[in-house]
Length: 342
Image 1 (cartoon, rainbow, N blue to C red):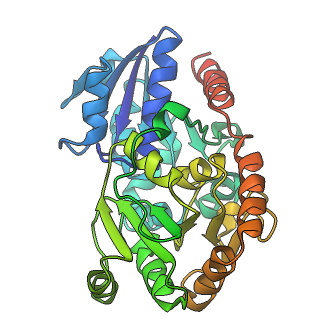
Image 2 (image 1 turned 135 degrees about the vertical axis):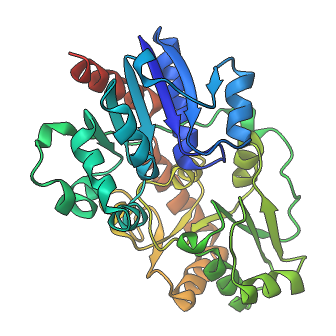
């Protein structure tokens, strides 16, 4: 089958990483895979596609494909363009930010109707975030397929980008922009009384408040802000962590948290409904109210001060992440394709 995988851009994000994972699975299943991005720029994910032999197009004729899979809420315009010419799956990775985008671009709401099928990562997206936009549509159109994660031990043998300087390393991975609230992590680490904690933030830098930048600049031996790394180096950096933190204001199902959990890293997460029934406070992570720097600092201090707590929560996080396998992800997508193309 000829399948077009349409991504928004080629930066390294959880959404683009999962599309690459799907591309490899579909090609291994015998399908002919072509890649397209709405934003025609260079980027590390594009380089990876090319290195692995996937054709990458700058313009596309949708009539040439049996199926188009459009990746992220921001691909709604491509869903609308593709749907008249081919079967179309809209794979939504965002929560509140995706909803805000659609409400600010009301004509694009037709993408829910035009798409042959819509895929979410979590029931929270389907039943809460986007429900008011879709309740009149056939519920059979909507599927929930959780991310599948894997960490190859070979990816963890390379030297971390920055050697540890202090006893406890806190790592956060993700695009540095307002939704991710990396500034809260910087402010929280700066509050810690222990001099043994360092903080490493890795991602594509878009925006960071000036006060957080100054904190990091004034303590370069304690704070490291690293532009986006290749996937293997990023995983090695997470593997070097003693604590993994996502201080986000909004998430759907962040790949970085699942990968860190699979590496048995104790997690500190903002208390978001997307995590409900997956990551539970004091069972397999510590949570704090989004934006509450004092509570975030308290959680970090608790983990930094107790090796036993880090080990207990890290082990529990790994057991949780092991449920999210790449094989299960691939099997669920295969079943969806069979229904869509029936």
